[in-house]
Every structure is written in C-alpha cells, then in structure tokens.
Image 1 (spheres, one colour):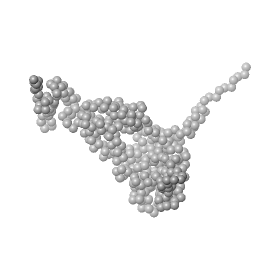
Image 2 (cartoon, one colour):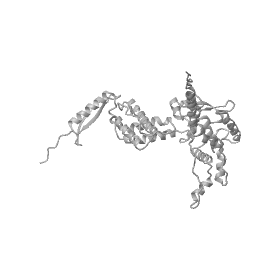
Image 3 (tube, one colour):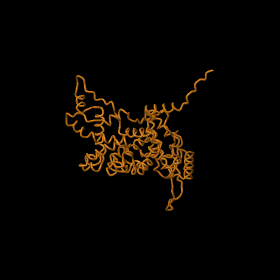
Image 4 (cartoon, one colour):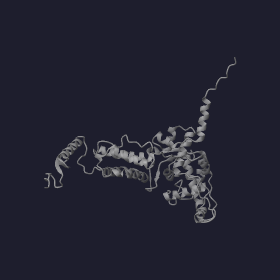
Length: 404
C-alpha cells in the first residue's frame, strides 16, 4: 500500500512561507517567498533570512549572483581604463567565472582559494594569481558597499608559495651596445629596403625607452612640443591606448612627469627632429606613424625590424630558410630577443646602479609607489662586483703581529 502523501504548502512539493521583510520607499510591503524540503529546513532558511536582513544585506534582491556583481563592477570600472587594461581584467574574470552562478552570499574564501590553488597547479605565475585575487576583492568591496554580502572572500587569500614568479629582466650591456649601434642590413629586395627605411624610427623609439624610461604608449603619443631640447627635458602628458585607438592620460596620476634627456640621446633627438621636419606627422609626433600616431600594427612591424636588424637577420634569409629543403639553411634564430617593456626595466636598473635614489626613480618612471619601482630593478654582475669592492674596503685591516 502506498505511503500517505505528505501535506506541503506549494504545488512543487516544497514547503513555502511568505514573509514580510519591511517596506520600500513607497510604503509597499517587501514580501519574499521562502522554500524548504521540510518544515525544519523552511524555518531555518527564514531565520537566516531575518539575520541577514538585520545585518543590512539586500536579501530580497534576486540579482545577487557573483556574475551580476562582476558585471556591475565592469560597468563602473571599464570606462576609466584603457582597452589593454580591460583585456587584463577580462582574463582575471575568466578564472573567476566558475563562481558566476553562485549567490554571492553563499561564497566563502575557500571558493577563491580553490581557484588560485588550481591556477598555481596549472603553472600560472604569482603575478597572474594576485591579479585574480585583487579583481575578486574589488568586486566584493562593491557588493559589500551595496549590502549584498557580509564578507570579502579575498581577505587573507594569497597566491600559493609554489606559484612561479615572473622575471622582469633588464637587457644586458651587450644588448644595449647593439641597440645603440644597430645598422640597416644590406637590402637586395623591396621588403629589406622598406625595413632599412623604417629601422631608424624603430631604433629611436627603443632608445627613448632605454634612456628616458617611457612606457610604450607614452612614447607613441609624445609630441615635439613636449620635448625641450635646449634644457634637455621632456614632459610626459599623454599616452596612446593601442587597443582603444585613442589618446588618454598616462596610466596613473604619477605618470604626468618631467624626465631628463641624457646628452648623448639628446644629440640624436636633435638630428632626428631635423630629419623629420618636412613631414606633416613628423613635425607633430616624435615617433610618427603613416597617418599620425603609430598604430599597434605599425609598432609590431617596427619591433620585428629592430630585432632582426640587431640579430643580423634579413627577410631574404628568412625566405630562403623557409623554402630550402636540402643543403644548409641560413640561421634565422634570434640570439638577442627582448620586448620594449624590458627597456623600461633597464632604465630603472641603470638609474639605481648609477646612484639615483629610489624616490627620484619612482618619479621618473611614473610609478605610484617606490615598491613598484623596486620590482623593475635588477642587480647586474657589475653592480654586485662594485658592492663587493665597497664592502671589502670597509673591513678593517689586521694589525701586524708584534715581535716578542
């Protein structure tokens, strides 16, 4: 004989109770339906709801999933940052996407710890993991401010110790010398001739980062009106958002700054300005693109030209290496390979090694904190040798043994 059917309060077979949680700004009652599989579960949920209400949480908001608040955060955050920064945050949000369907009040630090632990196991860097934690923290702060959750699940969550650290390397002195002395490769075809014509622009751009520490987007937006060659100083006022294709203010408020121009580079800049005076864009921008500011595509092409020239690799050699099936292929492997951002690291490293104090380097780099500046600096072998000599000089000499 079939068991007796239990009596519930809803057609779904669940127990339901409608409770009033207050009134809205119009005086209308705020009513919420609570469901449970048993009377005990129903009463427990009602009790939790009233506790949350008493603590100021927005318990009647059905749009309280992690995804909802992540989307709200994006809406508020993204208009004030460039496309490149948006891309970085989008990457962080992908790692947090596993939280999307979960009610934000149900989340705990364990949920975030599981995500970052998995990231470390997958070999992702500590820097990437910290970005994910920081992004989660910003979303939680927004939700807490709007009474959607009680805790910030990112509090006390750190990147696992086994997560690899990314190395921000300065280029070597040999690479610096090659950059200063790079010359166009003998051109036997149209592509190599085109590269030879563009190489001076690539070289001057790279030397700007090496000698003045500008970010790539700051150098791209630099105008001659902000370069004072008489007083050997330039003023960073703008940056170019390559992804968004627009001129904006520098990355931080600290990014607006004056930077001294080393004499050796200043003489080259003077000649460069004279060389470009008959070009419409060249009279405006220090490093002009074909139609104004350098585009991202133009910059990528310039950097390829520069690296190949530094390594003595021609387009003709690349084509031959790709076509040859027999015999000895031309070696088109790059012995020297560095990014434009590494030149900025090198600038900071060289400044510290030259005895410039950290606070000054912080200003010149456009950093908000000295800690950020120190992350950019590297100890070269020559700096270690210099330190060894200085420390050795401080060791008191032993007195000669007295004769008895």
